[in-house]
Image (cartoon, rainbow, N blue to C red):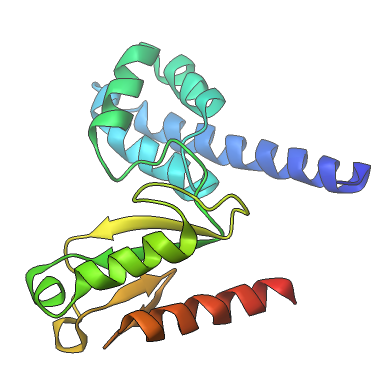
Length: 172
């Protein structure tokens, strides 16, 4: 990383932190600001794509809430990520329709091809894998969502082809 890129990353982090502090300040107007903790954690994850430890420490300080309480909330709810996600987040539907139509085979294909399990990120940082209870595309079952795009009527072979398309795009 060049010095310019490093400075840009720092400036971006400073801007994100300023946005988060502004959001926290808005919640502090209420008599019970700790009731907005989940909303603040959602905002932090929206800004950073996960919840970095220094950011959770900053939230604790800004909201005057013990860090242990923030960690408890962040680890209790499965929505919050404590590690950076991959460049492409793969959500595999494990709902009834998808499961009956072969989601287990698609999941095994993803595990074998990516060499990761649920909640993990590939060593190259390209993909992360997470479960979904329903993606609302039951008629296309089994489905995965990669970032915001639904891929349906999957077979193990089709799943590998889709992964290879994303890999090819990443090399450009």
